[in-house]
Length: 165
Image 1 (cartoon, rainbow, N blue to C red):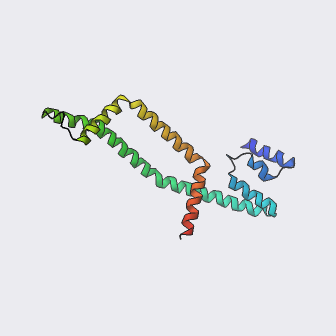
Image 2: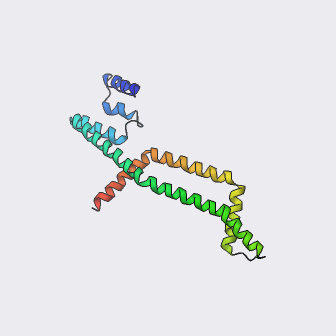
Image 3: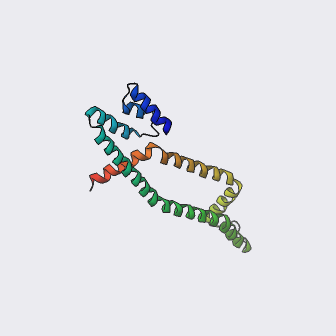
């Protein structure tokens, strides 16, 4: 961060505007923040623009925390249910098949039971594929959360919500 501030100061001393220098670091300064500064520089009210930008960033951070607080329990519940379903599939389906085998009903199993047994066999045989897919989805989710796509989604949601209040 120190290097970024020094680079911005050197650029300003060299004749660049603050917003031009800030735009060089999009991971540190979001485009909306840079635009606040640009408008402030062009209108002569930089201090006011910086205050608005600060307020925006603070409210954005609060909103992200609220969204995470709302989503985290739901995601945890989804993961728990998913694990419960996989456990039931891996352990329950073979038990049901054994019960049917005890009564000699091998070929007349219900279609859903046959599907469950097939899925269980597939999961046991290709467990590494399932883990790779889960890891990939986790990485994609992390990229989505850290990208500006989420910021745009949140802003659009706020605009839509505000229009219908």
